[in-house]
Image 1 (cartoon, rainbow, N blue to C red):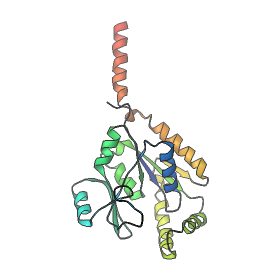
Image 2: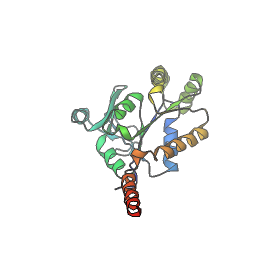
Image 3: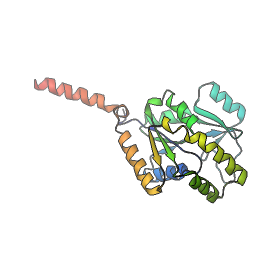
Image 4: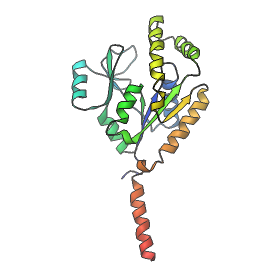
Length: 213
């Protein structure tokens, strides 16, 4: 039996609020945290590696996996399907490894309602302001003006679901937010349900107590 069960760490935010940067920092802090590799039906972008960045999947195969219950969560975003395969996540948490998810509120809700829901830790990141959110999207230089406008329109829908998360942080200072995330994760790893070995330890204490009686 492992000393502890792994966590499904869900990190959500509107695009540009910092979740990708903070996800990378968390993995640098603790390399044992695994990043959940999502399956997607979209085409690979330049430099993306299948199985590392995403598991690029045909739409028919993706839909078949959803129908057979092989996806923890899935969504249709900007014309493409995205989802988190259940098998690798189950294996990881059984081995005591944490799995990090960079997903939206819909995916977070599906995971919390899944068979692994009791092992989730969900965190939502809010931007300090809408003006700052747009500035960050523009400064990334990854999207054209039309895409940025679509992301901004979608951002309020994302933000409106902030109260469905275990923890909510305003990311107005990246370093401070990172430290708060580390504190939250460290504490949640000590939840009773994450420590299956506690039952055996308490039984051992009970035996010792009875022997002393």
